[in-house]
Length: 324
Image (tube, rainbow, N blue to C red; front, side, top):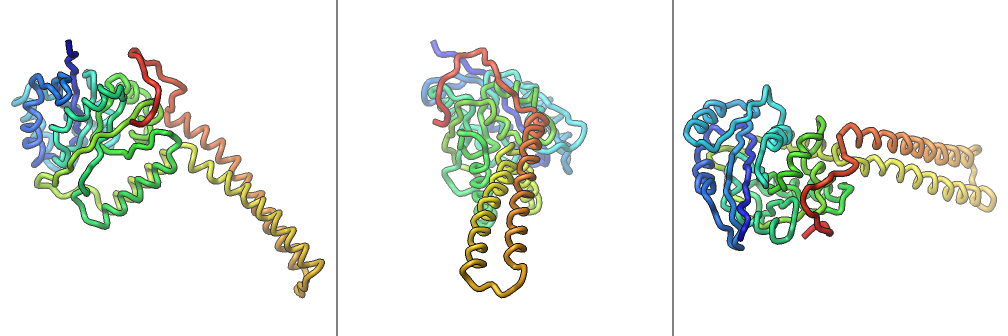
């Protein structure tokens, strides 16, 4: 007998006045028992609309939708905290076996949830990210910058889970609720997921154009978002400082040998040039090494401050392996 999976849908709402009614009409059929292509039964048991205090009348729309649909559970934030904080707030209140997070703008189709669930159940995954098989519906410059930023983030991420991040995700409910409980201020949600989820995969989807709403992210906001992600990536960026320091000391030693060779067998006409170059190179390397040691201590404190757990105990059997 197939197990019926309960799915909680979390949608951070910032500027959803025009898009939410259309999106909820698409979600409505999923609130009745569904069967995925692979035969897994599921039902969307609740939709958590997290109001992030945006500039439009989304609050009134949420109240209207709550009266119209019994499966809607509003989550009211006291002020604007940002998309990741709003998503975590919704995850903390979710009760389903699985938590799906998605945007309010209609780019992501609720119909893809069944494929993501198949991927998670059949491969015993804890997190499944949607991976677009079509170019994102933005300008070419933004698409290139987005791919570059995500590529840099994956290189810096101190994790073997090298799946590209996406706001459309399916998360094991237990993992999601534990994550929401310990995440500190300033944490990047997907980085935190990579800390505790051992098996992460992706599911191909098709992105749509936004519903009657321009993007809420300017290039400056996207740059700030990218910088915040780099800061939240953990210890690896700081460790680069240590590596640079040791590399500089090695270069200083090599340069010192070369300059001494020139002094003894070459022609250096400027008085004091040899000692000046050796001194600058050596102490520059020492300074960078010292900064690297300080960076290691900062990295340790950063890890503690962000709430990275030492371990997580699961109530369900876990499987070996990482990315599928």
